Amino acid sequence: MSFPSILLAQANHLPLLTTIAAAFAAAWALGLVTQRLGLSPIVGYLLAGMVIGPYTPGFVGDASAAQQLAEVGVILLMFGVGLHFHLKDLVAVKGIALPGAIGQSLVAMLLSAWVFGLFGWPLKPALVLGMAMAVASTVVLLRVLLDRGMLNSVHGHVAVGWLIVEDIFTVLALVFVPILAANGQPSSPGSEAPGLATVGWALLKLCALIAIVLVAGSRVVPWVLAQVAKLRSRELFTLTVLVLSVTIAVGSATLFGSSVALGAFLAGLVVAQSPVSHQAAADALPMRDAFAVLFFVSVGMLFDPAFLIQHPLMVASGLIIVLGAKPLAALAIVAVLGFPARTALTVAIGLAQIGEFSFILAQVAGEHGLMPEDGRSLLVAVAMISIALNPLLFRHLDRIEGALRRRPALWRLLSIRAQHRTEAINAIARAEIARNERPLAVIVGYGPVGRVVDALLRDAKMQTVIIEMNMETVQSLRKSGHSVIYGDATRPEILHEAGVGRAVNLVVTLPHSAGRNDLILAARELNPEVEITVRAHYLNDRDSLRAAGANKVVFEEGEVGIALARHVMERRGVDPTTVEKMLGALRSLWRMNE
Image (cartoon, rainbow, N blue to C red; front, top):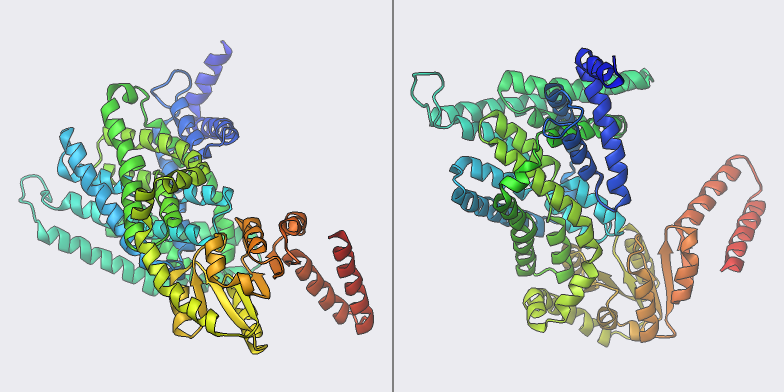
């Protein structure tokens, strides 16, 4: 018997194991390739599914087994979303994320309903496809923001908050897809459609599910996790997390007719209320990542590459919606709400892709007859292309912004609301700076560090001006009587408005490094005599910051190390004079290296 024949015989005897092995191997190989090319590994996982799928030559995995594994992937993905969902993250950017996500989702849904109606699709499947195309991949967005160093920026916070709202919409869509499918359908052959009665019964079951899981579960689940944690068994704790996520998800689907995805999301919300939720998240992460790979592979197995040739206009229409209509809608909404063009561009490019939740929604809709095979293939094609292009678009963010600035009419259209809003706020601060003759300190950023610096300098009778890009923080500071400038501190005109030209101190408290050197250079040009103090995470940032013109750099790595060493030596009874001498010598060494 030939070697391929032996492999085929083994595959027939062990379909689950061979499918898992082939899926992981193909995903690993193609994930490495796509990562090396600067693309998202998700593209590689989807390609891996195509390679072992029924539409390409060679080994064919067991589609049924892959779908079962994909269900576990869906459960763990949605469990992770519930586990990491924090209302405070949404509240921080609610003024832009809520109206923005609602408006952009409506544009995607209505445009999809119209466009795919022209292709002969019924209204309900076209609307569901629009829902799937409206939601972008959180995984892809977080990755590109992290790679660009923008995750902790205000623009990044807005984009992430926007996607949190979209994730909530996805959860709501998972609720209403079964209702949409049931409305107008007979409950049994020969019976009449119950209409509102079906919808009412479905909503009643949904309310019962939420009440049981969130109310009863919020008391039982944290207690169970705490008791298991006391046993100090990592294996039992991990098993408990897995049991809770899978059992609640499957129980929700079996007893209440909801999707397993919704049940898993609710399970995550409940577990998040436990004092040991961080350990639960750490234990769930490896399982989630592994099964998420199998989920994307299973989606790729459903894709027939011939679909691209057979339906090029349909694929082009989907790409126009995802890469064109969604970003343009987001760009317009952010501009109308009065936020800077940079924020608008970050959100617009971040939304120019679809991913995991689109597939989850499509899978649930398919189970209820609201997503035809063409719809799934269309989503896979659009997702692969848009995910591949998204990091490339982010790399050209500065170039895109520069191109817009070179078109004054278009730039004015994008920026006019933000400029009016900024001018109204900053005019008050400029007047306060002009009439105050005390020594001036400009503080960039008003996070926890900025608040401490501001309070201490004000107590020292200095005048402080804060530069901040979070509009809600700016408005709160104005109400409390602070002098505050709204804008990007890397822009020379913003530094000028804040009074850097006559300031004696500039304190940069931002935790991230994006644009920090440009900020220092611009401040030094405005005022060669200003004392610039900068916060930095890492000791290896010293050379670039000093070269840019910083007088003093405070390193978090160094100061934390000193604080830890001081505590240990004091607890060991080392003489205080000796402690100060040793730590002083260490700081002197750092200054010599500067």
